[in-house]
Amino acid sequence: MTAANNFSTKQEFLNNEIVSEFVIHLTNLINGKKFKHSYNKWQCFSLIDAKNRYHWQGQNYDDTKASLDVLSKQLKYSILKRDAKSVLINVIKIMDWGQVHKGCITYVLKKFDQSSLIDSLSDAIDVLDGDDYNLQRFDQKDLRMDSGLTKVYSLGSKHSIIYDSRVTAAMLLIGYRYFGHEKLNSEIKELELFAGSNISKKRSHINNSKVIKRNLKDNSLSKGSENIYPHAHFNLIANWMLQEAIAQARITQLDLYDTWGVNDESEMLRAVEAALFMIGADITNG
Image (cartoon, rainbow, N blue to C red; front, side, top):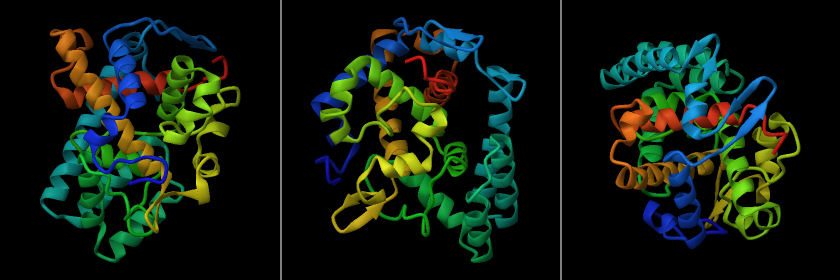
């Protein structure tokens, strides 16, 4: 259990009254409730509209999804075959796609040299795909979490999103608009639902690793006497909230997958993640 929260499983977390309320809000947004946001020459009017206006490195959503499907398939196959060299190559390919290398590449190479890369990735993926709050090993040495490795874990998983600074910013913005500044910085902050609390600054100054650390006690979340790196915490609870929101959205909108142009929950998570990615590129307008 965390210092500020009394939960050790997904269901216990979702049973929290404020979390449940926010999940309902996410459900409504996924079902098409208006969400207008703009910056520079980009704008959207809902989450699905944001997904449809996705772009990254000259590719639209469909092109990016095709690229990620290939990267995901190759990574999962190499892990299954326990081919360490192939795993390393595919991890580097994913980091290259995401344009994030600092810190994470050193960790990956060290694990490869120690012949523990496959096991470390598999263990991290199992935790992020799971329903238990077992983050003790995410101490940045045994298991590491950062903006590069969240992409690797996500593409190796079934149910975990890429939780980078842009998705972080989007979740913060949605929370800010829904709960309001005062509540977000009081009781919501105590729940540690969002990284950061100020949307008036540039995204890179809100939710990069340094600011995430500064917003949490002792540069980490505490569970008993052990320390948990906050990025893993936020990734896991975002997974849980979005998974539940999608499940609830499907109950009220039977054609949800068709509306979003996806085939299953995994693709739906990726589509919502893409919407958040675009929204979170710049949240300075609030």
